[in-house]
Length: 473
Image (cartoon, rainbow, N blue to C red; front, side):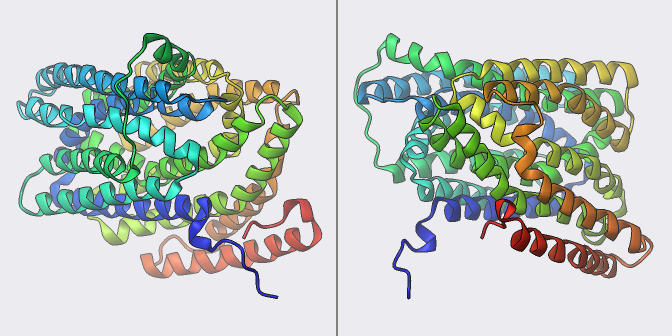
């Protein structure tokens, strides 16, 4: 009989997946096109300007959003207070952005960095207001509105960046792209949500949200900030051209990683928050989510690893080849982080964001120590320092996730191991059997066929013989 359930396009998974696919595709497109046009040095200057803005964007956007989702009850007055406080936080962030512009202009001896920072500062009050609406929509499960915010902002930002790069704007193209993404996405969210705030702004309302929002935002800020500081350190050690190559390597991977993790966070946090006081139910939710997402995210990681160097070779000038090679360790690190991600969401859903904050503090210290100790001069060395620092500090976070669920530290990751090991076997077979000297398109096709020949039968066997590890369709 025909099922008369909800259509696929009404599903939260559909809209979150669409957001990740479209935004990730546009982000990769802009990275390749803008980098090919403006070159490593100009990309490095633009990346320096955008780095401080991303940190401030994370702060003003996330300070109240996830705390709104995590609360068991949410009076209307609390939301109104958070809205006006969000605008105020955005104004404070704009002042910090202007000060950062002066420091960057002096550090890089490039007077363009201050007006670039001034332009980016104007976006932050709007972003602060939109963060509260984001939390409300996530709590209500209105993922379509969230997806449209990202698609519209990213779409117009990509068009602006490519157009300005083609007309000789240089590093301004990257800055303008980020400004359009920030303002366009926030405006789409504010205008399309139907939210109308009251005039209430009470200190007690704000303080209750900050108990969760402040440590969680600080954790996210440190996670984002360690890369920005790392990038600035690479620029100081090896110059703008090397910074441009390193930035491209990270963008090639982070475009997919950040979008997948954002989509998964929005899908997981509301459901886990509802069972935050039942550890058995919370562990079951972790298993279900990881068992399903593993068969999507780990094959994506494997496909990225197989395609990265051939894709960079085919689409970009030879000067960018080190960026493609340096992206490979970052893809492995992404898979390692993703297998522990649902356990981390469970920790936050239970109202315990401090452990993630401690992990990110340790990660920042390890990254900066690695820079001072090894002083990397090229993309490969830089990425190895970064990856080593994350692998050194992340096990603490995994142990705290398991402690919250009252299980051993490996237990929260077990549901994802079948997909991870199957993907790993397919990738290793493709690298071992496909020759590296082939023409890029031929190499890519050969690797894909070999990986599919290993992955598909193994995945089919796990689906038919192991129901607990079944594929999520």
